[in-house]
Length: 232
Length: 288
Image (cartoon, rainbow over the protein chains, first blue to last red):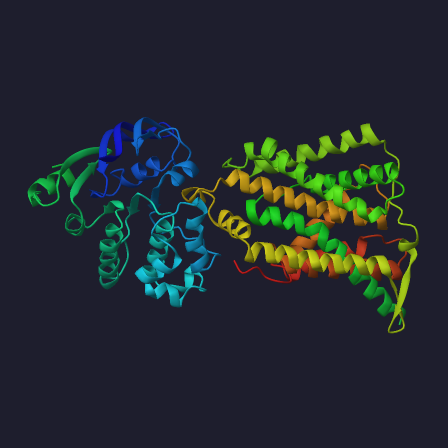
């Protein structure tokens, strides 16, 4: 069953159009990679989905409900979660308080504070630390844990491996296996195409605000992908 | 001995000044908004107290604080919801500042229209004059109660912000007003509550100051000036700094008055000016 369905989505920043007639869908429990060069519109697309950008036209259905005009704070309560680009932690809140912010949406489910600490044990030791006292990877774990605490049905992850040490990226991608076990659907925005394809079922490639390729992650060839990625 | 007494009384007055500043500091800390109308709202609370005392002469004037504080919270909530949230997202920080300035002028003139320009005060009878002797010093009971109340309110606010889920949401909204929406928080609603809380704290300060000195519809500016100096002197964003700033200001004022009876607030302002030159970040430098 389709969990998220986007038809003919156009997104604008003032007079500037960033997304052109985009079609996109995610099935329940599915994991989808969204790749593309810098400026292709990946982050804009995700921010528009969760309601953080107002200038959008088109149709967005989530869990059988039209959400294109729904404000972000209501979309969160429907079960569409996001790990924003650059982590965007609450700087003056401790690790534990950051995680507890996920509970404000009052969605019940498998993810609780002890479960998040099971998933990322490094965070339990540092629960009273401030985000700036953590390594980049640990900060990313807080951002993911915070989003999980909302018990989302679909989790959008924006550039979670950006700027992290390879061993950290390994750890975080390992955690996604556990997250998917709970039935959470995923959208992973990635620069690293190979890693994205390895962790997901299906792949979308964006080029200048349009979908340039969509394929099953297993079948896609490097030439096809390169062409879709760079547009040549 | 007389000088020590003056300084102690200044410190007690400072507790009250801290209360004037704390509401302003709260709104600035959470929304990055300087509420120029804060002083007028304090005077409005004092007028409400005077009216209530007139209507219910059998009730002790201090109990009037309860309905006044509740009303101030409601006024603050509506002020933010109806007026301020319209410009809270404006990219230009001048827009909200000018709006609060406009509101302060409108309020001031409304108060002249409704209450007249006469000087008013709030009489507490015996309690205003009562004093106790401590270590050979004569200490006013009312100033002492005011300082105790200020410290308790500071502790309460600190606890509410650090330990409750409401406080956590307020701090998170102050950090990132966009991102809290991803967790179901509506920033405008948080702002409404914070403005309500700010004006409720301001109302306590406004009423207690009306006990100490008389006021007119034009007194808001003086109160705002003190609140400003308290916040800046203490270090912007530091609550305990605001209390400390208030105490330093109160001491400077009373010491100045003792030395030169016509000085008024001159020496408090001079001290503020000197501190601004030598320690612009405030007494308690903010962590950020």
